[in-house]
Image (cartoon, rainbow, N blue to C red; front, side):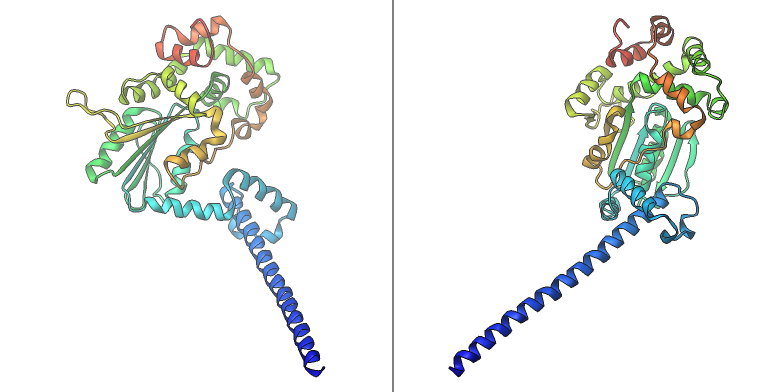
Length: 355
């Protein structure tokens, strides 16, 4: 009887001990997860403040902000850039390039995401030296471990920077990026860039006033469109095997937003300006996938878009949206193209028939 009672007592004691251990474990786990969540929220919010040009972020405490602001802004940031853990992983992935002598060329048509694309590589290779401008429309960044980035709106400037880097040391990886944007958004953006000083802070009286300026530009200053349409893409595609925009847009459609071109063929008769370089061709209508696409070819690089034109020029945002909705008539389209084959092909791939 005594032995049975002792066994029952020991059994109950053991069960009580297990229950207590379980409760203690849950408390420890909950405390750890709470601290982890707090770390992620604060760290992500701090990154947001730093990366979104929030003024005086270094001297501001998160506690001084409205909690709703932290949650909202952190959520927005994580949607675009990922969590704090994602940011750490990005830096670790980018670190894989530390031992690789890399050349990145964002050689792009104006108003096709150039700043966001080049800035994404600069952030991934950070810290880079202050930008220099060795040639017109060309910006160069020199980063640690012999990694270099060039941002250019013409191929010649990018070629000169590439040759300068190659003369100093071997290039183990060369990655070029260019993009395209549909006429409905590209033409208004190009128009406003050309008239930014006079229009961005202007007091417009009506949408019609903005439309008149836009139509005048299309009819009388369209050489700016042809110059922009032909200065980069045709030259790059010729470097990579004389392919055409029509061919590459078919590949973009098949791939869901991009085309990837292998290094150009080498020949003594016609040596390439970018030997052993790869080219990624992106479509701006798919920019929500750019981080995913770029990461596939350059791990650790996450696309970070610049502020939109309406954010930069809020005074005329309503009128700017109006010209984005405007579709060119036949006279304007003829004035813009003027028998230029590259400009005509550009409009054709976006569904403008009869050009």
